[in-house]
Image (cartoon, rainbow, N blue to C red):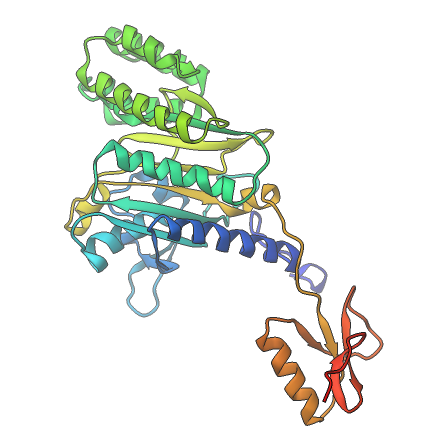
Amino acid sequence: MSTENRWLLPEGIDELLPERAAQLETLRRCLLDQCSRWGYRYVIPPLVEFTDSLLIGLGADLDVVTCKFIDQMSGRMLGVRADITPQTARMDAHSLAEEGVTRLCYAGSTLQSSPQSVISGRAPIQLGAELFGSSAIEADSEIIGLMLSTFECAGVSRPLTLDIGHIGIYDALFSDAGLEPELEDQVFDALQRKSVPDIERLSGSLPAREAERLAQLVALHGSPDVLASARAVFPDDPAVMAALDQLDMVLAGVHQAFPDVGVYVDLTELRGYRYHTGLVFAVYLEGRGSAVAKGGRYDNIGAVFGRDRPATGFAIDLKALVDDARQSEPADVPVIAPQSDDAGLRTAVTALRAAGRTVVMDVAPGVDLPNAERLIVSDGEWIIEGALPRES
């Protein structure tokens, strides 16, 4: 690499400069505080893990986007996390092993072998919350409510749309079809990508009943009225009816608590990774082509760690959200202090910083910070220029 391009970063990898980094950190703190107010405890999973635990039982799609390398100390394969959710499942099942309901939240960088989002490239900063130990639909409603409340907390002004579906409907319609694994994966992938040409092509390889079901399922998307249409199309399938009942209950809660949030029901909604087992959902901002938050139920991950626990959760892509979050004006005006060995100056600087003020030492005299104040000596006392000295 020549000296002219040593500053280049790998494709899909970016850096956050001071202003944007400060905005994202403010957003991170705001959303984590919101999770804490809902009873979710903060955890920090490791950046890398053995792939044996990071990827086991999670499906090929997550494996493909995970960057891997050999650990020089153990000789085993390590993976850099592409998704933090499975790590929290391991922590719940093994590291914590608590009885009852466990609520956890997190925030951290991830790395993907190929970009899953145009905005965040290959290195999204993921913030999320997970609820373990309850299979009740009320747990799913809580997670969706918390997710939507974080957008309110962030002061997002763009209209939101909740895109929601249920993996259980797909499973109920195709689990007993006896399809070859490769064909089933192709059908799932085509639905996940919403590729109508691929869906039509694959229908020709399906048995007549499954081809008809697929055609019916693909048409079921739109307003919440879709749920009534689905009941009419699949009236004799108890598993489908149960999934539709869950969707009805969750959407009733969303309508009551977040009446301004738009709702789009898509019964072919299979977004996310293949570990999801029930409700799946995503949040879109008006004018944005990709989701800024995704989540769903995943009841099977803990089993690979010896503790099968029901779970539901969501993750937000902070890089995708930060530009639409409310940015507060900085309350602190920086103070410039001159270089000096004066003990009084050191005392004044220490006191200002202890009070929460930003004090910058003037290592380059004559270069001012915008809108900054200065420390000066007045009557033998160090004060901020323009302020009156304390009366003795």
